[in-house]
Amino acid sequence: MRAIELADVGRAYGDRIALAGVTLDVERGETLAVFGANGAGKTTLLRILATLLRPHRGVARVLGHELPREGWAVRGKIGFLGHAPLLYRDLTVRENLRYHARLHRVGFERIDELLDAVGLRARGDDPVHTLSRGMLQRAAVCRTVLHAPEVLLLDEPLAGLDPGAVALVDPLLRGPATRVLISHDVEHGLAEADVVLGLRGGRAAFVARDVSEADVRALYA
Image (spheres, one colour):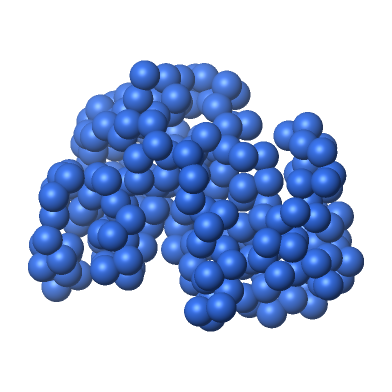
């Protein structure tokens, strides 16, 4: 059973086509890197996989379950890190993570492990709204990996992080999980990828396992 299967998946917003007939397979444990200019359909694709949007055509499966019909079966196995941190601003970092731990039936000891790993133990009892941009991203990473998801959906996961913070966070985003990684850092994204999807205007310009940096950069021309 593949981790991700897309067959002719499309999505529109009114008259605007966001995705048009994307087809690809990702095996368990692989990383799919997704590249494309702003508005190419990258975030729409990620939100479909996260069960937050319905595809208007085609078939999307995650861990063998068809979306959105069987979305209930995979939501607890997905870690989603988008542009918004999905943390309550007036709760502390630890209170946020305890809330998510209860949702996923994870022991609270996991929270302290993660806060230590990203260097936020000293800020764990501070409200989220007091955190800097980089600290907020580190807290969001903790939320994303708290339940050891089988699939990680990552939209620019290192955004706003200095090199020291990247060194802390990056190991948490690796491991056995299947990953879908949106990145504008072409060199880093290609280094991470087993499969590469290039999107242009909602369409797949290429789906391949051997892509040159020049091919990816042409998407932004």
